[in-house]
Amino acid sequence: MMWILGFAIAWAENVQEFVYTISQNGMEIGQRNVAITYMPKSNSIPHAYKKVEISSDCTLNIAGKAIRYQQKGVGQFSPTRSNFVISNQIEDTVVEFQGKRDKSGNWTVFTINKGSSKKTIYSPLEVNITSIEMFLPRVWLEEDRLDLLLVDTDQLILQNSVWKEAKKRVNGIPLQDHIEQSNTTSTKDVLMNDVRDKDGILLFTNIQALGTELSLSLQSLPNEMFFGEIKEDNNFSGIEEQEL
Image 1: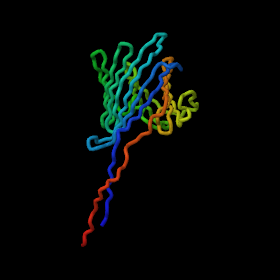
Image 2 (image 1 turned 120 degrees about the horizontal axis):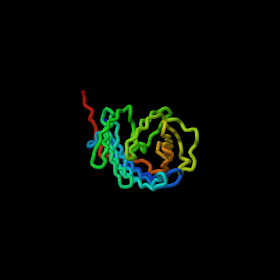
Image 3 (image 1 turned 180 degrees about the horizontal axis):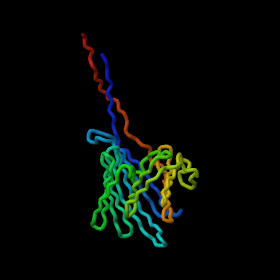
Image 4 (image 1 turned 45 degrees about the vertical axis):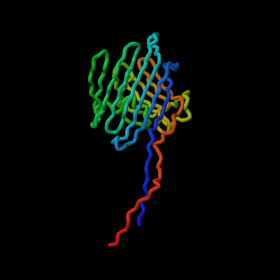
């Protein structure tokens, strides 16, 4: 008789929470909270996906004037389909972006402001990642394309460039000892820096544009990911040998 041992996998919803300090020109101005939920494939969910939730609140200094910026957003990302909804409030003005990526990789984004809606479509050659996805663990290699859609202001901004390995080490961030890679990317008007640990978790990032520098610095590493455990089934079943 041949015995087949049965196993059952008990999946657990796994959530990582991140707290980033927001700084402008080196001065702390607010906080961004990020939660990433990892959902495995199941009978009811045909594709595993990651959900990213963002909440931000800070007060910027623009030309000597204090401007309050608040943000709420959520996105779900999988290899086949992705979507997000982001609401950005600058003082009393609220702009919402609703985006959806189809199987071919095209992004369709609606900009909703003051009761009106504008539709924009981006091809995979224009956009391969959105700024909300930048918080997902990943490892960037030198010469990797960064076709980034920024959804953090009152308008959509494209950043099309290439990552380069940073030659200068980033100092003064809380998790400096965990730095594994530091990359930069730039266009004519924007310079970005992206610092991650060995697992691809974003430790620090900054953007220099229009004469100002905005930075996000992670305060502590999140809990380790746990995707469930394997449980041995107490009942055994087998296939009986048959005589020929």
